Image: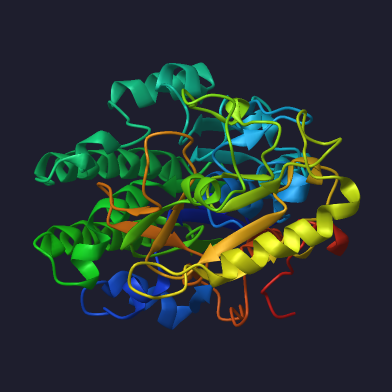
Length: 449
């Protein structure tokens, strides 16, 4: 690379953002001897744990992180959302994100953005330099743009996601082999385009970290049989982050962040089963398998993760709760959720959030009326069939947490105290010296002026 290429960003600073989906800050910060590269990054710049969003679910978190606004403005509340005025549901994709992405702001400012493997970005946008979609993308063939970018990714057997079904096996060996292969291909592609040095914003996400956490996190926290496999995987993540930092030109600031934290999963909580047992939810027939099957006398229902909806007259097609009873009914449900205890006698809910506290914007018509932020150990599920018991277990032993998300900024002028996910987008724009209006974001820049 010639001198001219190294200085091409001289007129404006650049940023490389690396996402590490679901990595809790405590995992990295408590093991500096195991993860020396992130320890060095923290020493040179700023590092800390940050809060996620309500709800702390990747499909909602990544649109929020990449726009700097809450789900009421992005229009994405989770992996599954409800159609307006209907019981039909859909899986939100990139085009469902209604707020401006950070790479669109960068592009509008006349700069170039390379975007790789960000969840909820399918189909790939054509107004950026290059993009390969992440989680929910069906294939590299359909998920990458432009053609030469797609061709390169296919030539290295790039993998969009790990095969999570392998994690259901008691023996995690095949799953971990696949996780390493996915991580390796992600780094190979990141390295190729970082070293091309033709971008102003590089925005790439390692999502395999979240997958490994779902199936091995309890082994890590409780010295299980797969703890060393877990640590070996994260030593590689640390190595790749260190190598990325070393290859970045001097005019680039590295930002590393996760979208939520992680903790041990002790119980799956089947919320619709609980609602049915408590008299809140009923179905039109015994053969029910979706939200569309709820009966007209149902008073509430749930969607993952921990989102509760009042079956409101005039809003839901078969709404049973009159509008003048809404507040009283919602308060009653809130109190029962706050009182719910698990088999171990611990409260399921760390807190129950009403919609007005968490969501603002033009897309709050599909917002949940209540969101439960669970205490560590209780993973909230919302299937409509197959569970006779409220509390159970499944193949996963790790779950998302609202607290303990990760943020590293390779800049000593950053202050990460009391930060959350919404602060990342304006911070990146400040680092790049891209102008924006303070009112555009729910967060604020962490760079001290």
